[in-house]
Image (cartoon, rainbow, N blue to C red; front, side):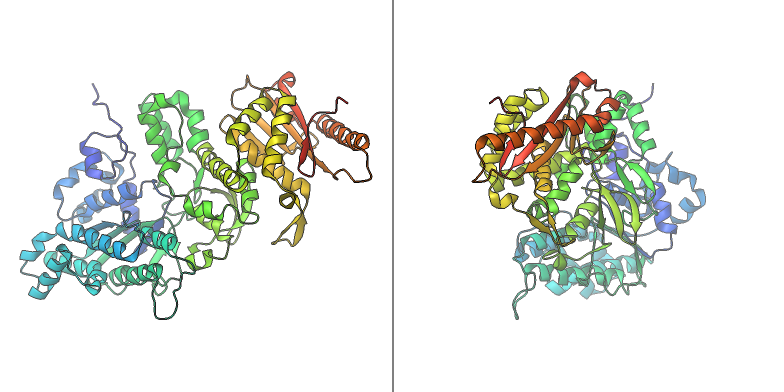
Length: 593
């Protein structure tokens, strides 16, 4: 009987994965491609929890001259088919593998202490060099300073290049250097530095200190180190630019999310996911897993699944579908920008299933992020909150939310923003939303009026300008976007779509239930002028009723509910909802007066 593989979450060491009989998605072809591809130094940015650390551990165990026993770990995997390559290169090089993922401190003093600890821990793996006859006494003294955490800042900055030199001298063989999550200290420093990033003359900010340190720490190891370096690989979330870390490098290549190289080496492909589900007898969940955790596109490879979420779901299938990945990711930078002009509206469009067209920068400049709100889309893209449908021009992409897991986090961000901005009553929203989907329209109208009355002011509704297009944003569009934001609370049970073609036109909002026994909803939003001082109440109500009737007729005439019918929601379970706004007052049902 086959020795059934187990599934353990949180293991990022290749040796432990194989020796503990854990299920391993075979990414060993990366070893061959990384080593034989033309790039001397490779930077491979990917979102967090997409397998970067495990891949680097796998590369380390394959090449490390100190781990000849690791050769057996690769038996039966793809790389073992490369017989000549394995014979020439397996366990033939000293390897340095350092992760900076835990260096995320609130200030420079704590950060440099963390660097001392991290580098000391790295050096302790090579303590045997203290007795090597290939090293000079002054080298050993510096080595000991690093281990004992008494090294100077200058010694710390040179510690990576120095270690490569020590290993090359000892083994008489060039070194492979692997650096994981190189950008974590930089991102942390940016978030914890008071803006602007550049301090007054004569002072150096936390952010500037980190940039200066990283410039030397990585720069000396990867630039001008040909005598000691055989190959280098750096991972992180994005390519941090202009801050001089990579500015004078001409010997490295970036293989980012849009690159066709290594596009299937991080995250799980469709085939890998299908095989895993079959192995653990969970294929019946395939469609739901696709909705929740699929949807990424790397290079030309489509249907990339989030590996962290897949593994967690398979390990805990009885707990159902959860937002596993988003709970490990820091969205504080996103939340800081959510109230910026045009940002929340675009996110609400995305939650509703739409796409947007944005410029995505290959290089991320934190100093520009202080004032350029458009860079948020680059941040969201590289961090895995958005993916791309297609490239439309140089650096221009059509973007979307990849799956239900990410809709969950964006919905929470929108609701948090509404609560913080408008002193929002979420319990009232939940009750009101249930009235809508249960076809209790009078009760829905009452609750909706209270929500709008409690949260909106005239100044919120007053026409604003789209700065990019230099045109006024009409009130009706504001109402549309705001209603979308409120309905996001239903996004776990409904596919919420906006401004899509259906029938003979474009509906405003449609809610398609995941459970086909539930009601579907189509909403048409209109706005009219507020009641004039010279207008009596009866005439104003007549105007409202006429507009409600017009909205209902528009739904029926254009058959905006065709998409619901196509999703097997019968006509008798389709709720047609007109919402007519007058100032901050919404009207949904016609007057009984």
